[in-house]
Length: 88
Image (tube, rainbow, N blue to C red; front, side, top):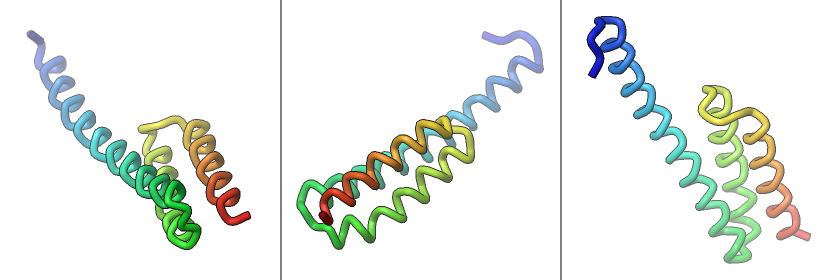
């Protein structure tokens, strides 16, 4: 356990940040799951409407620094490719 006041404050801050980050990461995964379900069902209209929402959440999470920007770009690219392949 921490003995210094600064260390105790750091523990409190880390707890709050970890909770926020977990919330955003969970939200991102949920949106990705919704999109993948639409893709697996072969519903191109639902996938096309879900894609912008999913991309927005992924970019927001990357902007906050919860995931790396390149990881966000990779996820968006792969999801967009799946939606485009579904349409073709």
